Image (cartoon, helix red, strand yellow):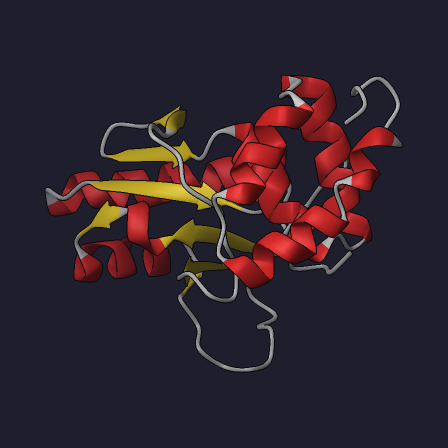
Length: 186
């Protein structure tokens, strides 16, 4: 774990600071959170992350206001370097590098005064983590499956809504779901 990685309490502190800045600016933001932050904010034990991934296509914000709020909170805003920064950051993610599949309605994760955090349905989050299926992704999947209990069928449907290349990688990794204790079998 990187020393710069933040746990749930530290991320909440940063999010409160972002919210307070948005309020001062008279702005608001609806951010679609993807990635590890979903588990972290849901209380996944010992999980930390240096980044907060925001799914840009489903987020609504004023760029300058959000950038100012993020930087005032002590985070980097959408760094574009090929090297991962040593400072925690908010990353705007577009389709291609990551995929979350199609879904109708996001779910509210946290509601602050001017900041709303939303997330895709858990089945889509699990499907997205199956694309890479690295050790941390599998730990995240196990936590999310145990906590929210999405059906394997819903995860498969989310996978099937992804573009072809990512759909194939995620489908190959569905087998991991059947090996997770207490989460059901495909």
